[in-house]
Image (cartoon, rainbow, N blue to C red; front, side):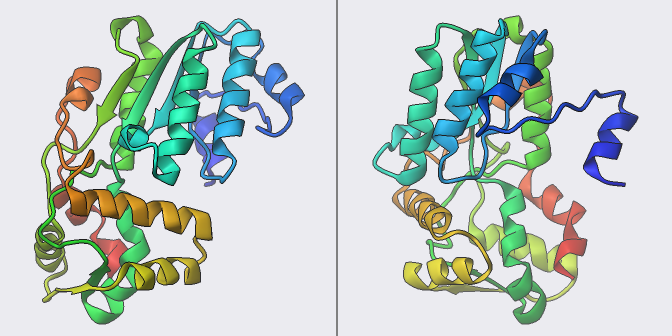
Length: 254
């Protein structure tokens, strides 16, 4: 069953639109009261997200939620610059809006599946002892649902979404070893090597560069290494810890 079929099974109405075609956005948002924008993974995401928010305002939408990142506090980085422009421009529209600033996703570890499967190794460029607070994508969805269902319950313009605890690569290596029942090792590679590896896996060069900058922030202990309780404030529940995510997704690495 594909995603559209699953949504239809939940009694959802599906409306097609294109972030690069303003007319399609206007039609999709007609009669809608609340919109949540899953910021696209494109190099032009700032332009596209702002265009969607403008269409929402013009259609009379009352509240817009959208994905952002903690790196807005580091606008000298690529992702920080993109998302800061998004936040600043949406706030300037004069519409009620809320940014969900997501830490790195636990699910990003799927990009390491090949080396975990074939070499029993996590290959990363940043310090294996450096803490950060990744969040599960499913938890981001739960936070977004809470926001869009009760937007007036949340007064802040931005919430920082992290996991419930900080972890290091060494911790994650131990979690994988336990879940998979085999020894795991850590291999630290130069940033240039990690960047090249991502591009070879099909990640666009601009996105790979942006991810390397986030890894540098982890190395520097900036913006990504603190646990926020905003997920609990939004949902009323504790977020998914990394060891649980690894256990639940162990099949990805076998």
